[in-house]
Length: 353
Image (cartoon, rainbow, N blue to C red):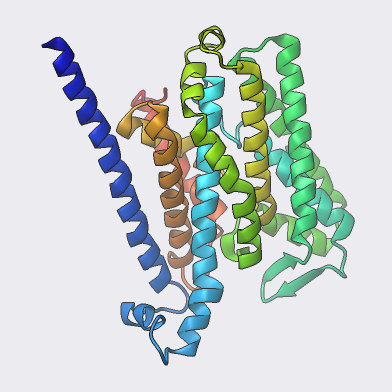
């Protein structure tokens, strides 16, 4: 009887997790439709559906395909990338505070982007449209961001190997690296000219308004194989969460899996940061929200965290676009304001695992 009860309990728990994932997918679709119809140029639901009909309104079509749709997809894929990187880092390091932001990966990627702007972003390559500065060679930023992120990861791993391999040392090393690159960004801002300074400051806010189809294609080409890699290794992560010795007993090379995963998280984070700037708290808060809802099983935790990451960032970006419309607040500011109270709530409720 006890075995039958355990089986029933497991099936019920599994069903609850599947229902949660489906509910989040439906909620994501609802938020997408709302995001399509709101903003500086208001579109009604009839305008939204008329886009797909013959003889549609040209202005609505331009707004939909060139502005709203790339931004919405950019918010979703960025939220997925940051959230899934955060949850995987927390699993492999066995530390609830691990995330691309707290590990210093975001700061190092931001330093690489600022360095690229200083070196290649003179008056000839930085323009101004309205009050928005832009950098016309974002792929250089992406390369520099990834290189500096790898350097940060290399230093973190070297420090942890020199001292010990426990997760606390790795997190402390990440905090040190984050402070170091934060000082580097401040130094670059100090020596920058006015246009470069404005570009770095605006870029560092974290803004999804720079999303376009080319950048989305690059992000998808880089990140989707990484997402698949994370999900394929879900059982290995589950073994790793129980300790390196247990993982080795099951045939999992813990050190290689940890290093490969950290490199994938670094690549995923750096490509997002290089295009959209620093967006904090997504990789830290979203995994804990999902854990509080469905538990700590990697089979469902990884995909549900990915879905909720997309929902969270899309909600924050939509809030930033509509709160003081037509003024748009960068999404990096919104995620910090929203993420801090949520994290404190989880902390006081003792939900951090």
